Amino acid sequence: MRILKNLRALMTSGAGIVVGMGDADSDPDPVRLFQAWFKAAQKSGLFLPEAMTVATASPEGKPSARMVLLKHADEQGFVFYTNYGSRKASELEANPHASLLFHWPILQRQVRVEGAVKRVSREESADYYHSRPRGSQIGAWASKQSSKLDARSGLEQRVADFEREFGDGEIPLPDHWGGYRIVPERIEFWQGRPFRLHDRIIFERDNPTENWKTHRLYP
Image (cartoon, rainbow, N blue to C red; front, top):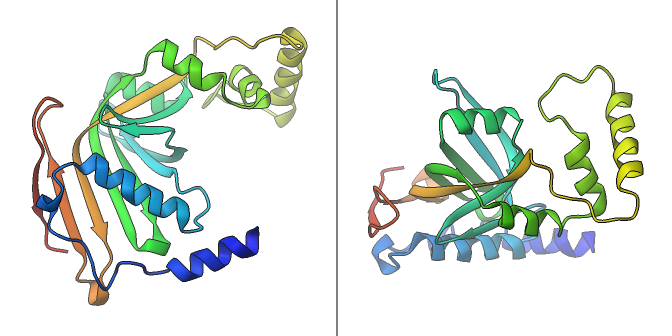
């Protein structure tokens, strides 16, 4: 399977850099374009094409960034899940705006998403939580994400304690765990081209009820 993935990755390396991107007004829906690019990334042989950087900032404007996994993307926004006690969550609660970055080097493509952030419903969080492996559900209870941990053994002991507490029964959704949805206000598609004359196409809107406006940027 690994050999097939590597061959697929080699065959798709640099795809699209000669043809490039058509004008943005050929399809005024950036979410539909993102979904097409995401499917291409999934087929390319990339490991974890759903990996994305989430950048947040404190109320004082101090930035921080980390990698997470995209779990859902549609017209409503881009969803990921986390511990609500984590640093990213604390910053999002205080300053509910974020930037996402997808980088698919085999395809020489990037997508940047900026927008306001809100929690997903508890029902939506529960549906996703219960679809996760049992070990990941236990882990959500055991980890005090972003808190100081004196030794690895402390985390392992908490895992063992919760495994014993829940036994073989259903593991409930923790109050401190759930999803965030980034509602996009700006999406940039970047396609690598020869001699660094890249394609950059921007979609922007002031609120989710408006139509998207689009234009190109110099590379």
